[in-house]
Length: 440
Picture (spheres, rainbow, N blue to C red):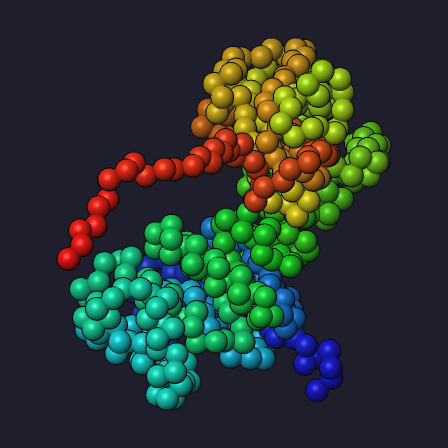
C-alpha cells in the first residue's frame, strides 16, 4: 500500500444509490415474485456518481438542502446502507452519531445498553469497564442509568446515546446533526468534546445545518444537492455556494455555457461581469431587478474609511438602483470573520425601518448606523437586496465579502465582541458584632 493511500481514511468512488419507486404496492409484490414482465417502477437517485476522499486527521463537512443525500452517504460509509454501485473504503474504526440510540433495547437499562452497544462496536467487557465511568460522567443522568430506557425522557435518552458514541475512542467520528442534543449546558459539553477530538487529530465527517459550526470546525466542505456533488473546497466558498443553492441562484459552469450559445450580446455582458468580479473578487448573484451600485463605510466623523476604532459610532452605506417595481425590498448586511463565520448582521425588515414599495427607476441610499463593539481585527461585509414576491423569497442582488473593515482596538476581550462591562471593586467591612463567637 502506497504512503498516499495509507493517509486516506475514507475513499468514496463513483457511488450511486438508486431507489425503486412503485406507483402501487402490488407492483412491488408482482416484481418480487417474478410475475411481471414489464418495468413497474421508476428510479430515484439518492446519490449520483459521488466521489471524494477524506484524509486522516481531516475534519470534512457535508452540507446541502434536505434530500440532498447527506445522511445517505453517511449511512453508506458506516455500513448501515449498501450503495447500488461504486466503491467505499474505510481505514479505521468508526463511531457514528447518526440516529442516536439506534440499536438500544428500550426494555434494557441504560447500563445494559452501554455494554450492548460497546459489544456491537467490537469492545470487550474489560474495555467497556475501563470506559464506563467516562460514559456515565458525560451522560450525567444519575441513578436513571439503572432504569429501563423506556422510562427515560427524550433528553435523557439522547444524552446517554451520545455519551456512548463519543466515548469509545474512535479513529473516525461521523456526526450527523448530533451536537445540538440536550439542553444548552449539554450542548456546550458536546462541542467541547468535539474540539478535543479535533485537537487529537481524529478524522471527522460533520453534517450540520449550522453553517457557523461548519465554518468554525471544518478544514474542507463538500456541497451536495439532489444527490449530486456540486463542489468541494474551503468552508467559506462552499457555504457561499450553498446560499446560492437555497435561493435558486446556483449555476454550474456547464449551464452557464449553454446560456451563452448563440447570443453575442449576452456573451459580451457575461465577459464584462466576469472581469468585474475578477477585479473585485466579489461573489455576486441575483435576478438583478435591483442592483447594489455602491457600498462604503464612514467613521464617527462621517469620513469614508475602512478602519473603524472600537467603541466609536460608524455607518454602513449601500446605494441601490431599481429596474423593476418591487413591492417591499429588504436591505441587509452581514459581518463575517476571515474564516467565514457569520458574526452579526441585520436588515430593514428586522429593524422595521423600511417596508414600502419601490418603483422602477428609483435609486435608494441606505445607511445603517451603529456602535463598533467587535474585537480588533479584520472582517468582511456582505450586502443584499431581497424581498418577497407573494410567498416566494427573491434575491434581487447579493454581494458576498464585498467590503473589508479593520477594527482598531487597544483592548480586546474574549470572543467576537465586547460586552462593554462596567466594573466596580469595593472594600467590604463587616460591621462589628455581626458575628459573635461565644466561648465555651
